Length: 425
Picture: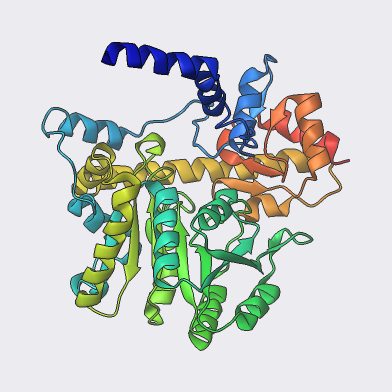
């Protein structure tokens, strides 16, 4: 009897088109989804790879290359991998990540003999590189200062806007770059800092500003810090290029040290993508300076709670590489030598590009190429000039004119300079 009832029930569903309706509902769930716009940076690489021209040049993506245009794995990284291979288990790290890696990372940012570290006043967790550190802080800001906003420099790394947008933090901007001088618009920047509501959050690039390569001088950083004190602003530093900018990690941390000397309780995102070449390992750190050890314990616990539903806990391999290198004097010295070598090659390519442009008789000033620092040169070229570089010379970069100096080599710098000269005449 039950069997007959089931047959009649199914028959009624088929006659009424019930299954067809269910099927049509299921297939319409994602019909409204449109393709996402291409990432302006990663899209450059896609276009470059699709180009079959033998003279093509990619100066778009910020990843270091040697003078032959090849990716680099540092010798200190290879040696660290050799030492840890087969020696560790694959258990989960704690939610906060590797304690050894965090400790060594804090020393880089805050100083080897930092009282803040000794007094345990820094809440710090391992993060998924600099991007993950920024996102974790953005969510922390939203949860514990829900009515605050973040002031972001114009321009900035495009993903900064995505990070704070998706964390639902209101965004504002402040002046930074001066297009006419291709340098820092310091007076307008200071005016924006003064005019922002007291107690505002500001995103600052610790060194090697991306995309402009324009950094404040030491004296300007001191003035910025003093104005932050007057206004009671919170400084959140994104430090993606420590050591990679000048070749000296201590020098590259100067902005942070100035703020710490002035008694600021800052936040800091650190990454080992650029300065150790650990792009794919996604290893970084988020730290927040607190009033005392008790507060640091509370803040760290909340950062861990935010991380739990995102990714639960961070990956172990990259953290082991970093802690092995920084925890061993010989490997750390090798790293310092290698990171200086990367920075010096970039600086050398800046000089070569400027000299080539000047030898071609360009009437324009290219002094900013060597004045800027870090991986990127903000060339000043217009989107239309960049389009010509791509269409006529198969040179790929973002349309804002940002040149990744890591993609410039002794083999292509002449070709690149000639193409820039032609499109900027």
